[in-house]
Image (cartoon, rainbow, N blue to C red; front, side, top):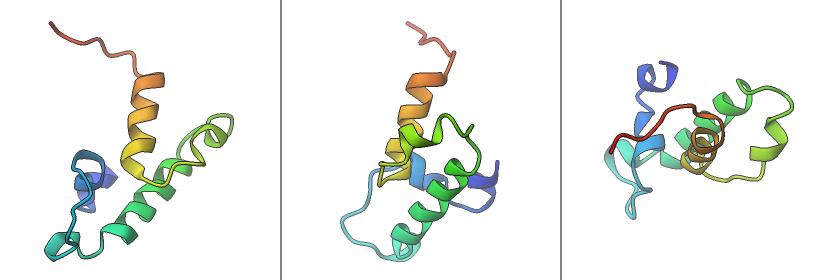
Length: 74
């Protein structure tokens, strides 16, 4: 909810833009903010496994793949 509420959802859902204009002007800063939110909200035993990521999207993708119990629909 916080990611969407702060208009940073694009960081997790979209590819990094080639040109950082408009809403993407602060893309690097937004990425760091979202990464810090993720790091501050995972269990301490999980944090070391995601600390090396440089993109919040990759970090989030790893967490979803590793810890999500959702099943894919055919």
